[in-house]
Length: 339
Image 1: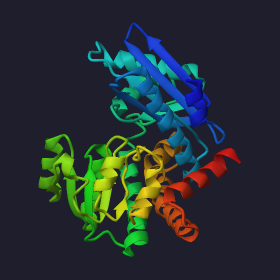
Image 2 (image 1 turned 90 degrees about the vertical axis):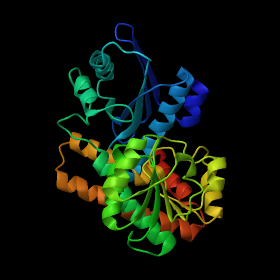
Image 3 (image 1 turned 45 degrees about the vertical axis):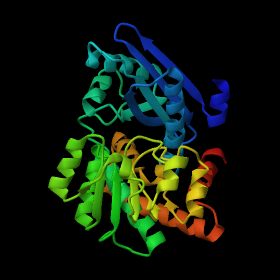
């Protein structure tokens, strides 16, 4: 475990168990140079504790890089709660997790993530102030989608020389809270929208409400498009799926989109512009971090729209130096975190 922590440059790992509620949780803290660690809490079923630990560490690292390039005074952290087949009292489970967060004395601030909701954050908030994305604080999903839209404009301009998303053929994978909000924004921009999700009800809704063309989940990689947008869980792009892609741009909301970092170079060699995920999807983090600090909504929206400008800079440096945007973004973040 310590070898894995060294590999990810982790500061700390915390494991919690509460037999009374069935809570089994991990909090990973990657880097606190810029401020207290902040990151969402996932509530998912994992095959093993090792898988949960690996997920938490990868995501915490991404949060550190995301905060650094977003200009936030926050470190990177992530929590995962191992979802059991049956939980007698979900509210009690999250209250117990709130007590765990409080024991860290502000070293980690939690937020909503895959499998959790604002109602869960409300339960956590009964026992700690180190939580955001509560019902009062609001859902960060719309800001994540808004930032991704700004990043898509930047990427399409860099790769296709087009300043507008009108007429751009977009394959959107995943219609969760962020994915559906992004689909609505893309429809308003005049993009040609093709959508896929394991939940066929969401696909039908997008077809009815947004005029989107339904796709089978297994068809997303081989479908020709201008832009492929992974908006589900991580690991959407593997060696196998990358070889199938028929797009010019990858730009989506998912975290940890690449199964292997080396894929960024392989995609670049094929002329596919990969937009670094932790840069383009930083809108949600900006929302939760700045809301927690009491920043007004107008300033937050302005910061989120600035994601496009950050990517303009990364793409320009990538062209000038002949390196992939992913490598450029990593180096920029590491200069901030480890200088």
